[in-house]
Length: 477
Ligand code: NOJ
Ligand code: CA
Image 1 (cartoon, protein in one colour):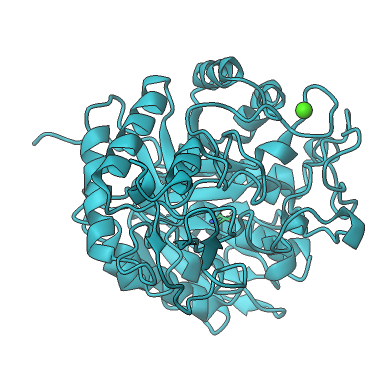
Image 2 (spheres, helix red, strand yellow):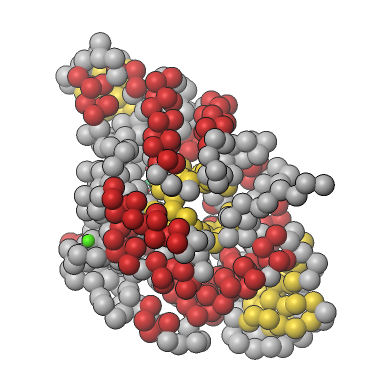
């Protein structure tokens, strides 16, 4: 029987780097691509397989890169196309892939396409955006109406987000062709795949509603375009839906997204029953052969140590152990590996329209620190330098968990089997020989497991009981 080789993200770790806050190479206070390149050895040491960069395209930054004014270039704050090429090459030398963040649902109002579209009702680009005589009542995600009146031509255009982010009309075939070209441009440069912004709302028909059938058409089209590339390119979607059946639909028959972000998991809380439930249902509902993807944080939500773990590192380790031992792909948001907390942003330093700055602050490196960073540096977590030299740090633990994930076949590709366990304990088996058990309570728990503890969140090696908030990986004997 022919065996199909698993893709790199199966059992892999994807690292989400927010480029403006990862590492700054030129001291202007803004992280950049050269800074990231200079820190690849850190990410290689940590053990990540791929890096997803938040938008790197030129943008007026009304929504920090999610308002793209040119899909085929690099934002000058971050560097140049040459810097991106250099990053792809330097990452490849370390076996690390680079993914970009594609923002197909809307452009910036400064994009040339929109400038042409709004110029006249007769413009050949008019139909690339959604124009109507009347505004309907729909609200935008950031508040205010989803329709803005444009005086020059006396019509309203649609925008699910800011008025500076007009929505593209995905019913227009030329828009689809234009994005095919964009995908090819980046795939040809060696980009390993894309995270797709608001993919669950990509095609609007009518404008007030996502048209799921038509979204699936676009995803199948992209998969067949990507099929012409070797190695296989990855599409991971921002599928912000809370229904798992709906989430699963974005995998199609394994001919749409290869990974669809699981927000029910992100928001389950550090609760054994809730986590076990969402993981079990996810595993049940995905098409055969599909891989789940797990994340605890991203640039839009409060960092997980603050949101789920009361900023208690015992809980942070337990959450990280779960993240890094589940089947499929695990995504670390930059700083998760440190247990980085949400940072309080004084009103005068706020930059984001939607109050998300506290999750986007510069990574504290420790030895060479940021000068005048664009957002304040939090002082509420130990730096990379401090944690690297401490074998008991969250960072050292996270690295060990990643190494175990890569080094143990059960954790790379073994199935997920839930195990019966006392209330407040979440336990499961991976493959035939590895058990993960997390005590998500403040009391000791008894869960006798016949085997050897190969990783514990608090460095113990006793498989007969779990300390409060302790998590273990046990090799069954
Ligand atoms: C989701 C992105 O993650 C978020 O940061 C952005 O504001 C919206 N999409 C609009 O593009
Ligand atoms: Ca810089």
